[in-house]
Length: 450
Ligand SMILES: *[C@@H]1O[C@H](CO)[C@@H](O)[C@H](O)[C@H]1NC(C)=O
Ligand SMILES: *[C@@H]1O[C@H](CO)[C@@H](O)[C@H](O)[C@H]1NC(C)=O
Image (cartoon, rainbow, N blue to C red; front, side, top):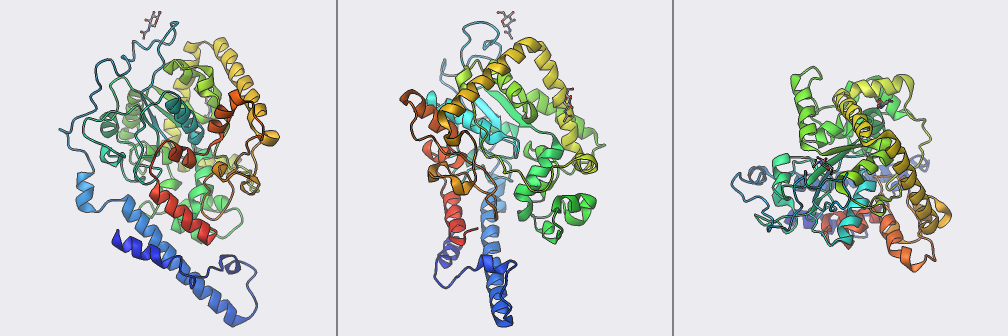
């Protein structure tokens, strides 16, 4: 840590002048200037890489801490006071009238799956009912990509119980299980793996070193022509570029698709999660969620958060789509399984009832959009006036859209509007999460204008 602070002290000195923009194409023709800016670029690159490594070493605890990061077997699991927790799953019967809203929820937040939108729903519900969140300590994920451990939870004590866990993590069932009462609902969300890969590639590609070799305009197409050339399974951040769902769910994302373990893992996910939502059928998913948790319509209203601006590069189609699907074969099998079971579930729920409820949800969202959003739609980061509404951006771009809250909103809607539009990081802070690493990182990025 001490080294970390020294390193950080180096940053804001005025001598570190950052001509980031001049590094890229329009370099001045004078050779000396050019060398100078290249040298500056190298120094900056080195400092930046050290910082990344530092953050990374913070994320992956050193060996001795690593051993301790699995909570010992005999550590007391969450032991709720009698009557304080939800009744059994069976008792929370949503088909009957007068069911009790469920308050204990584990949301395994997968990457690039509309999960930020769902997070907002959970934040709102937790805030409304004064529930206890298990937040990470210092940053907005549980030391991802390291496995989850109870000890990573802010203010964790053996025996402590939480209502909601929903930040990014690499899932480890036993550890999560021990933090919530027995009746907690486990949910997660999946997405068509080719689309997820596309999104992840654009969002995280720049932090996976081998992709720096890609030179054409359509880097994604180039990657998919010959993935093995640009992909090292053991490389830094490589998990973002293949079978990310499998990885997030805690499994080996480099398994041979023919291995019997693939099917075992899929069935394990099925046995542990009470509902697997699908990004493609998000509204249907929310209707099922509302039903499972016995919530009200207002609880599942949403605006699409953390969405990417339409890319100038066309979306994956045809041959590239097939390649992306094949490249992410484990996730594809996972998705197919849960896509099938999703529709069985809709069948059981009742097709007509589903259509009816989806329509009601859409009408209500539409109504909120008119009430809350200035201009009625998402805008570029540069057009967002209130910094509290500014979403987190991937490195090097400002491609994530955000919203402006309407200036005059009737008082009865104001709170809901504001909460529905608050981006994840700001909301986490409002709820009392301590995010010093994230904040520091943001400071540095603002400083570098990166
Ligand atoms: C839910 O309620 C219905 C009718 O009230 C009942 O038939 C059914 O067995 C209950 N389901 C569960 C899982 O308890
Ligand atoms: C999911 O299942 C539905 C219904 O069977 C099907 O129409 C759809 O194409 C599937 N989606 C994907 C991405 O496989």
